[in-house]
Image 1 (cartoon, rainbow, N blue to C red):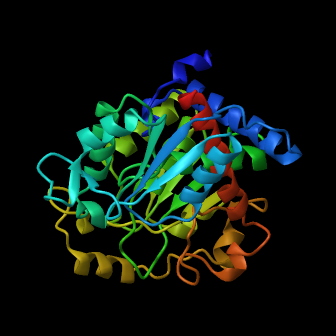
Image 2: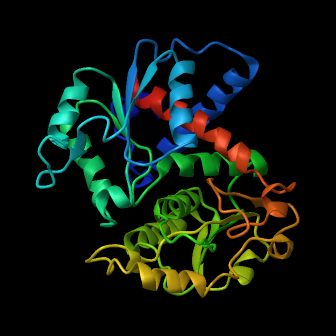
Length: 348
């Protein structure tokens, strides 16, 4: 394909991209990873370019992988924290001398730099499901430069690309790989859906045998599930849902146990903003933990994945995450390389 078609594009969800375009990003990521490994200079690729990073939420991997990536590509990343700037807000949500309308922020930054990246979910939008993604779409509407999703309440496409790149490195291909995205227990119910939803989108797009495992009451977005069913039919994989963690793990090549919030935690009309009921659902499923016994159910060459940070002792035991089947730090490193590829292809 012509990579020119990606220039200037927003990167908000993999649903906006074709499989061929995603494969191109992965190929470029692998090339940039090779260059990084051998010390081959590539700081000419985005020399003089500026990325604005707006973080409504805390971050370790995302902030540092984007900042380091821009430095390695010859550009510069600006860290913008709502509260330290006038917080970008949608029309109707403004507060005098505290916020600034997204339409104004987007147009100002478009005059000064080359891309805008945004992380927003949960408390900053009152757990109104989809509102953070709406903010990003609003930025994309008003900005004349690419807008990159660093995680919203619906999607985390950068993490999903790092996930499938890791699978490709470990297994060489996607066909026949059984990929299990599983809910896991956490003491905190405040977990966005973005990672599991983007993970199953990417895995089905790549043609893997995908199982989504979770207790009843932890269902994901119907729009996402429908897209996964469509991808599995189109690309020759499969997609199924299980309410049994152990059963889902049987014979799996990839296990990805991670907590996410039930719909009921979100504000109406999706849920009831019922934190008490959400906690009850969580506490009734403390057995959903990835331990050595669960790993024995998987394929002998299975890998354990997690986007990090994980809740050790709840989502996963130390023996698993620090064990030989864990690839979480390879996965974390791959955030750097896929994001560099996204920026090179969209910002040039």
